[in-house]
Image 1 (spheres, helix red, strand yellow):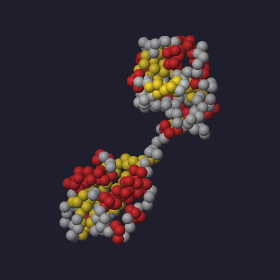
Image 2: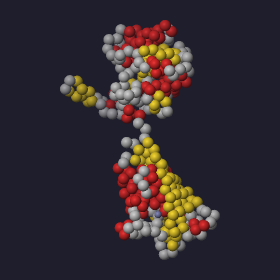
Image 3: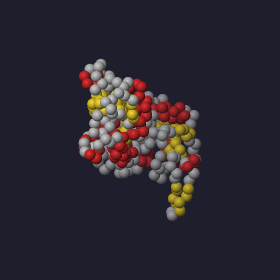
Image 4: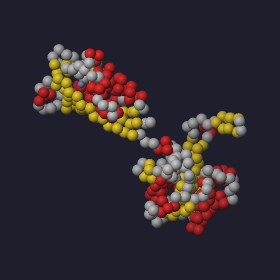
Length: 368
Ligand code: ZN
């Protein structure tokens, strides 16, 4: 195991953020650079891990594992890479892996696959195909490129040290990866499948994670004779129905309140007061504008959990129908909705079939 791992983290990341160098930005509970450091350490593939950076002070504070060294980077990526090779030469490495700190999402499996392929090859580079259709511009002319022939190279890229050192030390161009050096010399590279998730973080938007909010809802209505019973937007055969200014659908009312709660937009009474206008309104009509508002705000419901609290009717008998109806009214898939029935041991008004209550909880994410 005479492998060395180089992490290039000297970029100015001007496109990312003015305030903080990209490699120190928090991403998935860690600074971006620490993802690469931890994975290379945990792979047990490397004698030494070398970080090339222009933020030496910040990194030295972190007291890394003894197999990690830190050196100052150059102006361009290719300068930093050459500095790393010059530094490593004294250790007489057999192989060197070069990696951009801006790709924190590679897997240890990919590292091991590269190492395996390096046994019989002098250069191993992970690639993926392009999802986008790319045009090529020369002066004022634009050419079409066949997407199937486009290969996107990723890092880590691994090389026989000696061979890479030879080509890197007299390079003139500012190359943006080491594979370019090998291709320029017509040296053979073994390309292996890269990873879709191993994308490069360039803009702060690349790592924005959605914000998630939760909302709870509760409702209760009295059961009265000579009224139809509506639950979750459907009619259920029963001896009584729910009294109210509307159709008394406790499930939909609790859902509306939980959505409004997660959106931090007050409560159902604010939008549907007990006025003439809303007398005898059906509850799906109340839910509809709330869902439209939710969709307009770029919010996405993750899941909805419902507790229907009643002695009767039996929830198990109507569960499928109610979930199907709620799914149609909210746009959710049926597997994002759960409905639980809760009887109350014949206690109180609900136990005596004089009322039905419902509580819901919802989770909503903001993808803006
Ligand atoms: Zn209600």
